[in-house]
Length: 259
Length: 263
Image (cartoon, rainbow over all chains, first blue to last red; front, top):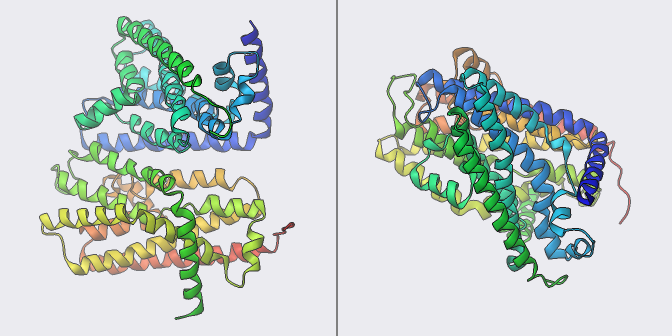
């Protein structure tokens, strides 16, 4: 209950913040729209010259782009300002302020700053996803249900990965550049995993879960595979559990300011 | 040696020692240019519009060229100028008896020197690939060099102009994101322009975008026929002049609005 109260306060703060950043919001919305349009245009141009892209039809490419946009928006507006800031806090010692508060530290660190004006990608992403599902004739109860299971748990996987990686800052101290590298690698996820050479494919599925959260859900949605979607959810929960354990372990190594 | 050149060399040395500390950050920043190399994978077995046959070698050289030119012309300029204007740091640069443009140019030179190993290695790789198919000659390398220089001036002047918008409002960074999205598609970084549908292809060549990336790459890889090279360079030169004048105009207008206080 306490957590829900705090969360609703954070959301309220984020909404107030949004009114300050209305211009950014609109520019971001136009930009998300233009980038997505351009991405779709490139794939349409590509499909003028060949039948499919790495075995994927236009509909499933749109589903992939939709999922990518949604996750990108969530990364920019939620993971980056919160978890992405942990290395800086460890380096400067400002993490102490959070440790002293009588609530779960990892909760505060995860939700205290929501950049809602960056969530424009999420809006555009849902439109593309919906359109993609309708033209790939995958718009039925089963596939919608699969999408509803896959999307939140994709976010959970991304979150777990970011949390685990940011936890390493207790040892490595200087990893402030890591978030921007992650964002670049995440860009690779906007193409179907099948176009890449095997080595990159394995690296970006297992070592960094880029394709795990983009191509895999797309595949599940186009095949309306609910059983595997449930498995996907269980995997996500398991990863979340692991990363929270790792976070606790890492935090026990924290020696406060001056590190 | 003219005085500005001496100033530029000294400034570049200063910037180099300053930015060498942040070399990891610079390499990560350069990794933004990897996306064209990713695009290479989706284009490699696409049949070419000219011959109707797939030619992976043609696509590899194209996107490697895009990567190289992208590294040469990209710059952190917009954010830098915008920050200097809003934080008042520009005031310190104005007090020096040299044009602030030299200081910004020196930052880009420092970035180029730090990134040089990557740029030189990939350029040698490109020339090696071209020599495999017999498309390599020194005339072309020389013209490629000139074309890159023009692209650099074009992009530098335009980024400078975007940064100068900071004199009028504090949203120039948001606006510049729009420009960069358009640039990404229409410069040919993501899809070779020859694959565009006809109406788009004709339209794109009236915008400055292809003259920053597609032009030098097409020259280096021999897509531009020898008799067209001069007109392509001329078009690049015209866009350079337009943006140099734009920069000068914005600078003259904006600097009158600038006020800095403090140290």
